[in-house]
Image (cartoon, rainbow, N blue to C red; front, side, top):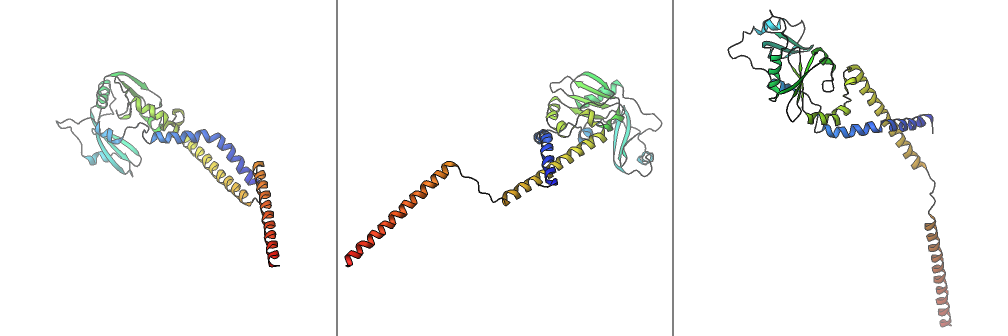
Length: 284
């Protein structure tokens, strides 16, 4: 066995022992994720929950005057008109992220007061509010680093049987997360372990990316070593010319059959000579 083959055996044995539990967890959590994903607020849900503009006719500027405020070279992918604390606001999805501009450029960005907070929450859930927490750090259900710019974030608890929770940005009142108790339970069994969505790790995008890449690389190395070991075992098996020793019972049975065959052959030989002798006497 050469050095490379010995190394492959060692790599497969060590990594297989260390990563077997991780691979089993990935395998089982993937089944859960077929039916339950990590809770997220989709763009469609946000569109359905947008606050309605006044029917009396809000004073909106020409769209060209609003787009003129965009930085040079930025390409607009989509535009959304919404109310931010009662003031019309344009949200532009661009190649450099999402940019927000109030329709009235003469006023500063309004703060999300209690009235608008409760009104926005009512658009998402009709149940009464039991508690509102002000978060200054990310938690398990908003572990993404890009949400740090939305701090502080308001976490709203509703008094319903489903255990509904809503996260709102203090910057523009946008819903960042909306989930119930069942979704959070299945996330612990599926998306969180499968995607390594632990808050202390996921909020650091660079560290989380490196962790996923290294785990994947180790898994690939283990598979390559396993293929090498399989080919080596197959090659040795087909090269081997050794006859495996038979069990004692099979040897004994074979000897009995051989002795029986010898006796039969002897009897047939004697019978043949006896018949030949009789024919000779009859002829004489």
